Length: 441
Image (cartoon, rainbow, N blue to C red; front, top):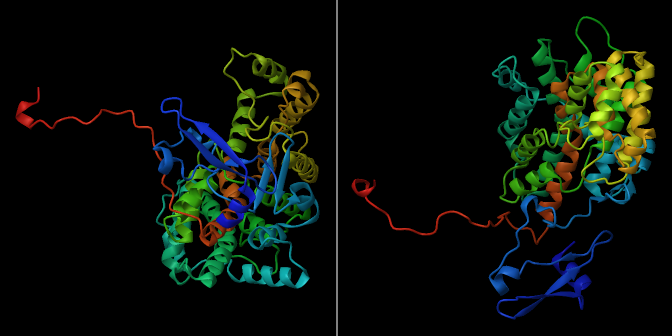
């Protein structure tokens, strides 16, 4: 949305602020989006008053205008370009969702065919990246490898780093989406000492990713359609999530004019934090701590005790104060995967299903709306597939890269965008005189 469009929507709608010290009043425009709460435009606040706002974590601050993703946490709504996430996860595939996030609408048959062809064309990595990845220690965390390799793409593909050139931006966007699964799979193979598996152009996106993860040169590997469908849904459900920490990091890095590969690497680094992308890993650690199905009631009791520091991971959500709309779909996929792999009786997963049953029936959890969220189910699915916990956030990054790319492109094309420069409330020492070294006690 342009500044002119915002101004038109804000005409004759203002909020009046009064300074109790000086008695002066200031009228600030009130802006309305397509849906969601109105926002107060404070861009001229400092210029007109000498004050600026204080909002740690930016929980009450809109940093940009966007037409990509909308969340209503109270109602449990997640929309990609206006489409409910449930409809997309049930009826589309990840490639359609990528096209939707990038271009604003779902593709027709020819558009989808061409888009998939162009993505497949970019799935291979530059051959010299073999040597680059071998420079990492064998026990490097896969996220460390991914941050390094994605950042290094600008050195191997410098022909698509001119952010002022729309074609360069498109090629870079396609390359990032296409190469992320290859980088992720190679990071995994490198960590376990297996040979790298090259992408196959005859496989669909999720199938190709699973093939690169689990195939070996020793024997043919058949990708289960149910597992491929579950992986495709996971990618779709995690493709974008509005202005979260990693997306905001991508935008902030991009606001300086940094190349797209550097911006996405910055987003991956932000995602690595356990408070952001590590939630599904925390679910598995919690299950391992509980240890046995017989101890589930004990930990449920601890979770209800406000004086106990124990918290059930994978239940409730910071944004969704209702049921996470992604969780319903992930729950279905979770049960399908466990059935396909014959793992319903596996102790850790059996314990997770008992936790799920209690959370959906227990009055305490229902009243507080502490329902299982998407991280609870995705962690179980990854565990069932044989994916180690160190790879969980890597898979999150593979999915989220399309959202980052779409948000980055939107930011570059926004004429009102400026380099990010947050202010601060300074609480340090006031100005003081300098003393020569000999005079200091």
